Length: 194
Image 1 (cartoon, rainbow, N blue to C red):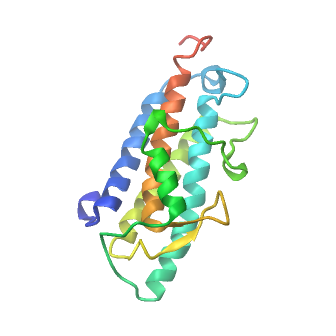
Image 2: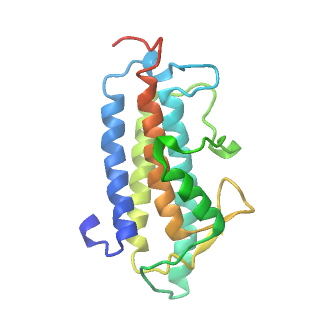
């Protein structure tokens, strides 16, 4: 499917989300509940909380993208790369996410915070796959639309807007950023042995 996506931005998004699923499966393979729920510190997230945060973000952005992409199709809009510069907020978020592990830490907005308890690894794995796959499908469906002109309020900050092209890039970068965070939990002092 990815090979048929003409937009480099969208093709990269779909490929990176596929790689994220593989990375998540390697991370979680054989994990016990104690390992998945281990918190390296009082204000640090467990592997389960990282996965929950990723899935929540992917789900919320997929819902926004789905709605706004359909509006563009209903209007008969079409277009392709280059998508333009996007919005100021989108550029700010992307500049931070592109720094990877060196990015400035930003507190998770309320809607994106992981649940405090009751996180089940097998459910989180399935949610991760579902929402990453849905975003990948949306990337394929968005090919041929003027993604730089499709702008919407972010699920995190209703007063800030991003372009759809920025949202697709943000989601795969955000996913990998927090997978890296989850992987670092395994190196933390006190992490339960395998």
